[in-house]
Image 1 (tube, helix red, strand yellow):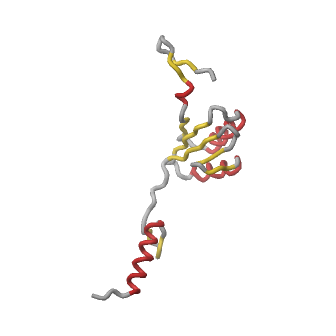
Image 2 (cartoon, helix red, strand yellow):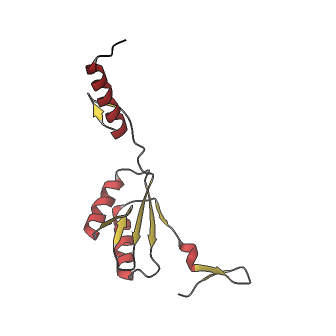
Image 3 (cartoon, helix red, strand yellow):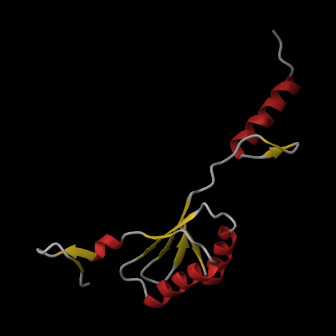
Length: 125
């Protein structure tokens, strides 16, 4: 049985389109699952990152405006314990001004301890 090389090339192109999530002839050949959460952080030097990509405050604002169009996406914010207050405030302000409603602060439990009476107490650092 002989297979035409044009068919193999066509099949190869469709396979590549499916893997890359491309649209050919107006038809999506694969859909990539969009991220359900974007992870924002600020390190000890004040560097802002979104999903591990460093960005400036202006880039963060643009990214948040873009994400506002996708209300299913959650923002997970994890500032470093020794991040500069000003940088953390800039990110929180940008999130608030963007109108994003699904915001989670990740890692807050590291700052809380329980006293013997069962009450949560802020840990001193």
